Image 1 (cartoon, rainbow, N blue to C red):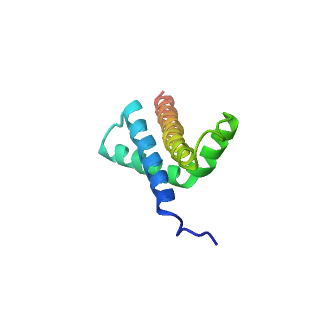
Image 2 (cartoon, one colour):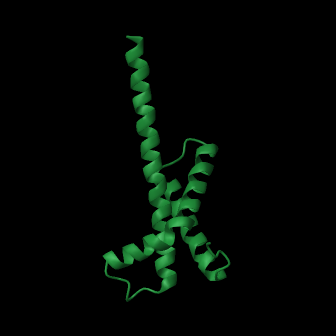
Image 3 (cartoon, rainbow, N blue to C red):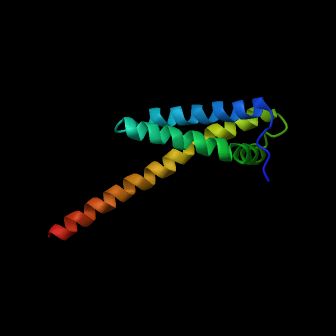
Length: 110
């Protein structure tokens, strides 16, 4: 069973990184409304909190920075990267789905 009682700094790093990534995603791809902004931010924070550690470790190893970064920096950057990328992927799929759905409606009319 997972132990979620870890160090408070550990959770703070993940939260700050995930929040930063989610905020950046809102700036780069502006939401259409408050509801979309809230769902994007929440999606980014949750995915950053969950996948931030493994992603930070993977990025640090692939970029050969593991020896020069602290654990906090790896966690923070991993959470921010996951948070930013999660919405880009979900946003892309949503917009493609809307585009395809619009084409289907046009094809049915003709």
